[in-house]
Structures are given as C-alpha cells and as structure tokens.
Amino acid sequence: MAIQPDTKEVFIQGVTLEGRTFRPSDWAERLAGVMSQFRPGGAQPGSHLSYSPWCIPTTMGGIKCVVVHRDLQDYEPMAWDFVLNFARDNHLQVVEACLLPDA
Image (cartoon, rainbow, N blue to C red):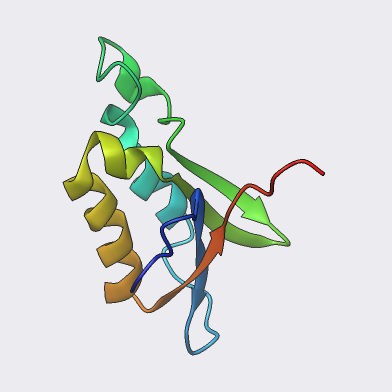
C-alpha cells in the first residue's frame, strides 16, 4: 500500500475491501491504544491513559475509523508501518487525506 508523499493523514476504515464490517467492534480503540505511546515529546507517565494525537479512533458516517497522522512516520517509522500493515493484513479500506492550501 503506497501512500502519496503529500498525504497528511490516512483514515483506516472498519470496512474490509470486500465490504464487510471489521470485527471486533472495538478494533479502532484497541489499535489506537497500542499506539498511545507514540506522541509528540515521547511517552510520559500516564500517557497510556489517552490516545496519541497521531493515531485517533473516531466514527465517520457510522463507520469506525482510525485517523493516523503522517507525523507518526517521521517520529517512528516502524509504528507507521505497523498501522499500515494492520490495515493491509486485515483487508481494511484506507483513504488518504491531505491539507489543501488556502485560496
């Protein structure tokens, strides 16, 4: 899965490439919880109690998603690879997003 270099965020969606809802239902929170240690300034005492700003679970259009920010790749390339491989290994849909310049 090649992500374009200008992509600022990827949205890992809880829907497989075959169109099935991914299970378990709390997969997004679990993935983001594993990634909680990767954050600006590094892990701190208690940082496991909140999500990293670079890997946030959310729901969009009724679909569970994890938003992964490109800064994660700069900070820890193996963590970036982990989340993308998670998506690939589980056949999850991934949507790229980038910031558009102001008009």
